[in-house]
Length: 276
Image 1 (cartoon, rainbow, N blue to C red):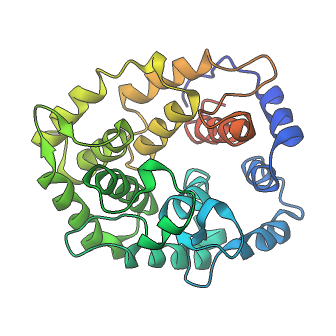
Image 2 (tube, rainbow, N blue to C red):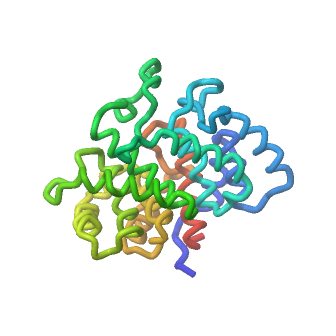
Image 3 (cartoon, rainbow, N blue to C red):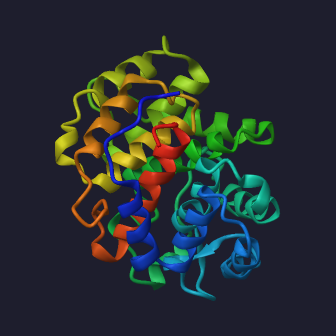
């Protein structure tokens, strides 16, 4: 059992119940084992999934399936350790993701995303975005703990290895590094050269400059790779402990609309780590 943290859990729960979207409230109920009618409500929410298994762009009903929202939609069930309750939907989602793996091993959003108001990091056809997308998919696949995906995981590792430079790391966003390096440690071991050098780079991050939504994402990447007890995790938890705001929430880099989701993720992670 890890030590408790000095946060106001009740305030955080009340913030989610007051401000959160229905899916945030449902996941909170799962964490609290308040399952009276949660499963029926969850089944209704899962109808958002497209026939191809993906989750729509920006989670807008009947929009094209994209990789980022598909991972975002299902990742909390991995942290909750309740993937069994969405197993059929999750299998379909993973199949959609894997259908987008290119022969070289990388992932990127479908080209049809260019017909929408997409973000710079979602742009297909660029090396930094391919590295970023491949890293988040790799970490998510490891979080599934399913041997069926071993070949796809190895293709991701090989692609990322080809795009690694010991002096500069990945030519991509910091998010790629904190998703990929725990994955390399899990697959190739702590003594692997990329694992060692990548961890050195992670430890140079000025964590105080990162928003809470990024910090908790960093912890998730370690949980997905069975590195919950790594020193990086306890360091970030201590920082999150200082970040709770007076109304119980943690702030998202994407704006106040997403604060309930960030607050939920913090609670899910702290609960998974036995801090609360």
